[in-house]
Image (cartoon, rainbow, N blue to C red):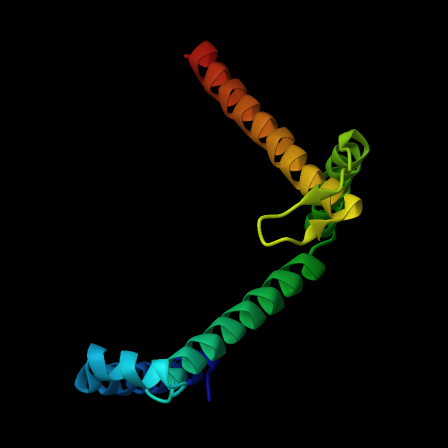
Amino acid sequence: MKIQNIVKIVSAIIGVLGAFFLLRIIGTGDDDIKMAASMGDFGTVSPLVELSRIVLIITIAVTLIFTLRGLFSDAAKLKKAGIAIGLFLVVIFISYALSEGVETPLKDGEVLSASASKWVGTGIRTFYILSVVAISLMALSGARKIIKK
């Protein structure tokens, strides 16, 4: 049996299950679902949530499998991916070195540790650095197109 046929069958099964669970939720009604949920009974909504989780896990697994298969099939692609990952780690290292960690009280009364604060700063700085790089590359690409014309 071809992979395309298997994908079609699995997609059809997931679609039918999703439609069934959705019709069950619609048939029950908002007020009944809210009342049941207030008493801790999530039986009407839970199957649809679990189906969504299963679809998410399948999607992630298939994406990872085909991505890794594509990477390992070509040495040039693997080298480019390694360089990109290395550069990304350099950006994270620079962001970590520039960040400061300070214990911070939170609204709920707990305290954010200095280490966690430093990692939050690292994430923000990494975002800023990558944003500047992306915007610069887009501007450079646009300028090259204008100059070539």
